[in-house]
Image 1 (cartoon, helix red, strand yellow):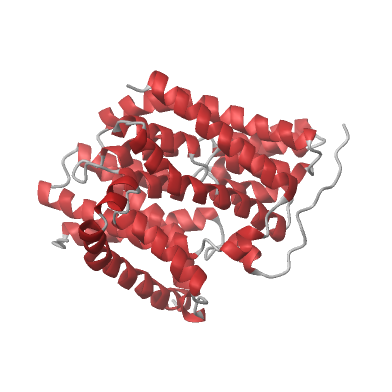
Image 2 (image 1 turned 135 degrees about the vertical axis):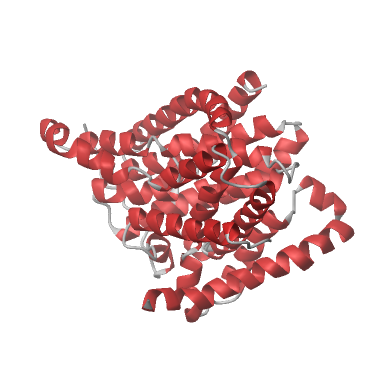
Length: 51
Length: 347
């Protein structure tokens, strides 16, 4: 099997890399924070929040 | 705590933008450009996404807003979790049966098509593997999950994300108009979006834009079941990739398979199912369910503005060459074949 390296074009600024950086340590952390936020929102609705 | 405080200014910007879009921009377009509103589906959700693109690309993003904008993916997930309250298990089972067969087929066909095309075009294996995962499953999240397994650099990962988001942007604008022109039902359009669109958040944007029934949200509900079904394939494809890159396949099977499946399982889906269970046991009254739907729509509006702001044209313009060709080929194949499948099998 012949696989040659064909790297992406040279990246001249950090914009592209900024896409790959997340606010959270991992996807798992992001999922857990999302669950916690959803739980807070549901509790607020159960406590009487009306939108 | 420091991180939470850093998120707040950007989050306030997103909330304020969502408020302006919902209260002023959407009503204005409804009155002054009815044709555009109907054909291009310029409702509050689509406008949120487009406004986010304008905000992110016309003005330089202020440093104080960066963290808040980055939290938008998490907010979209929170919205999807709350959305679980709108389903019953019976409904999930019914849509899930149709979605499982279609998603199983399209995930695997797209995944192996990208690996094959990468080999034919002689693109490096790591880049092809990440692209295969992104195009096959759910775009950005799948690419991030595959990156450490394939050993790509941050720049290469960002490049793959640029390819997926760039093609997804075209899909966001064209899907609702095509769906309207060929007269797809909510069920068919939801199935098409959930199967054909590469990136999860863009599935949501498109389904919310096409949505005709703002009470039952039928298009969004179908599209999310299709999307969640394909996200569930993530651990399996990561495992296949681990075999693909490893020279010691026995070791992967013996030591890494369970760990990989556990690590890559998308746990937010458990939150979604918990919400469905709560609704099924009657935990919410009718008024509370209506409020939960509003909460969910706010999460989506805020999240879509953030997603738009993170769609950086300058970054996407840097993508090119063979990997872009692979992404476009896979995206077009998936879009056209899934449209045919939807027309044939989803009535």
